Length: 332
Image (cartoon, rainbow, N blue to C red):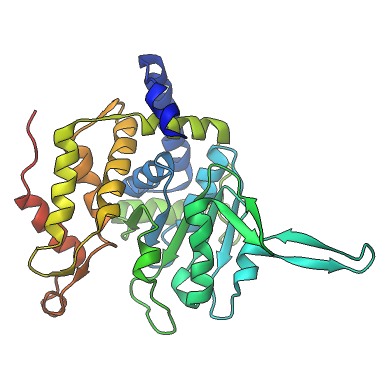
């Protein structure tokens, strides 16, 4: 959307009510398939509304693929899954040109990236050349094959996963690619009650370990998701809230225990995510609480702890949580 379109787009009360109702239905449908992980669902929805991409970090078996399929079915979008491996080539992701001897012409075979929701499973298992192939499509929402640009469907979101423990045979994502993800969402183990429900549900009357999304009803379409994104982009952000987000990001650059602070893109991501979170909460304005709630997922992949902090067992979340306690939030 252009700047001119942004300035003339008004968020009327009825549009806000429509957005709140639609996001509520999306939440409800996704939770039919995914047990627990309430914060994860909200953060992924916030990234979708903000037009961003998500890096999901968690051990296998927590429902990452199920989340993508559930979200895609809820808004009638297409989805694809790519298992990243050391021998995966960029053409396996993007597509390539094929020569047809009958017609004596080259035709373009589009890769799995041409979808609404792309699950890049274990993205850090592929070499840098293949990882970087995603940079253009994540930033420009287009793919260049044989010198010709091809647009991917909209809305388009990459949900990439990586295992936080297993590092053998992996290629850590460079800072330039990490910065392309709006949020880094941490998927924790479910509670005992949630795990009990999950095991009971999956093993009762079901053969194998298929991802069952039959109960999910389509409650939106891609065009309505694009409208939600336009609405989220018009959420009001007070100057004090904007300054609060910028102060948080700038403080990461001087905070003890952090050797590499977040760049300007961190503050931009924080405001975009806060706007989307405000829509999920039914408001047409962002608050300091919206910024604070999204600070960890928006910044944890944009900072680097010092060696001393790592030796002492401090994680990025620990450092950011301590920082948030010290940065004063504006009062109403």
